[in-house]
Amino acid sequence: MIKRTLHFGNPAYLNTKNEQLVVNFPEPLLDVKTVPIEDIGIIVLEHAQITISNALLSKLMLNNVVVVTCNNHHLPISLMLPTQAHTEFNERLRSQLDASIPLRKNLWQQTIEKKIRNQAILLKEQTIDKEKIFQKLMDLSNSVNSGDTLNNEGQAAAIYWNNLFSLPYFTRGRKEEVPNNLLNYGYAILRAVCARSLIGSGLLPVLGIFHANKYNPYCLADDIMEPYRPFVDALVCDIIKGKDISNFEELTTGIKKQLLQIPALDVTIDGKKSPLMVAMSRTSSSLSDCFMGLSRKIIYPDYGK
Image (cartoon, rainbow, N blue to C red; front, side, top):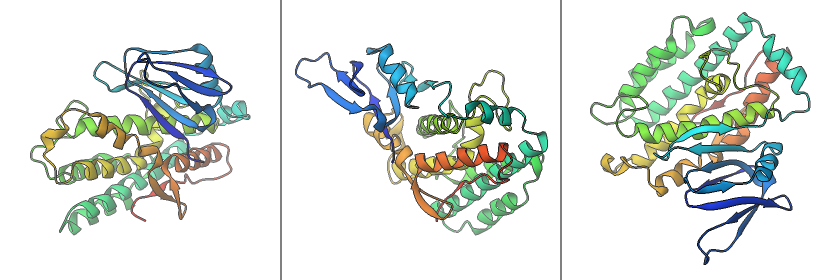
C-alpha cells in the first residue's frame, strides 16, 4: 500500500488519539482533521507555528514515518527517522558494517550505471535531435568501472545538465537560478523517501557505499537515491514546460503540491509498475540482501519503460 505524504503549511497543533493523527487549527471555523497513522509515510512541517506532541512523534517513529522540517525559506532542512524499524536490525546492521571495499565499489558501479542510463533516456525523451548526446551517455553508462574511478558520473552530469533544460545560462547548483529551487525541493522529498526505506530494511542511512562526508548523516540515502533523481527531473520538466520561467522563482503552494506527488509517481522496477515509494523499498531491501551475501545486484527502476 502506498503511504500518504502530508504537508502542513499553516499554523496547527498535531496530536494523537486512538492511533490517529489529530490536527487542530487555531482558526475556530476549521474542523478537526484525523488521519490513520498507519497510512502515513512522510510528514512535511513547513510553518513556524506548528506544534507537535511527543506522543504523536513516538507513534510516528514506531510506524516508520519520516518527519521533514523546513526553514524560514520553506525549504526542507532536516529529517526525523526511527532508530530502527526492522526486526533483524542488529544482524543487518552488522552486515552493512562488515561490507568489503570491493562489494561497495561494485554496488556504486551498479548505481552509477543505472543513474546515467536513466538520465540518457530522459534526455532523449525531453529533447529533439539529440541522438549523439543520448549515445554518448549510454556509452558512459556501459563503461562505468568498479567504484567509478574514471568519474563517468561527473562526465555524464556535465552533458546532461547542459542539455536537459532549454534555458540560457542554466547551471545546476543548490543556490543557482530557477529551476534549481524546484529540483532541490524535489530531491529533499526523494531523500526522505529513501532514508525511510533504508531504515525499514534494517540499514543505517549514515553509512554510505560511496558518499562519506563526516557532516552528512544521510550518506547512504544520497547514494541509493541517485538512479531515482531523473524521475524528479522529469517532473520538474513537466511543471515548467511551456511556461515563463520567472513564474517559478517562488515555490508556491501549487508547485509544492505537485512536487509532493513524488512518492506516488509510477515507476517500472523489475519489469513491473509500482509507486516510487514502494519501488524504493524494493531497492533498499535488495541492497540489504547484497550486504548479507544473498545477492549481488541492487534492484533499481528503469526510466521510460
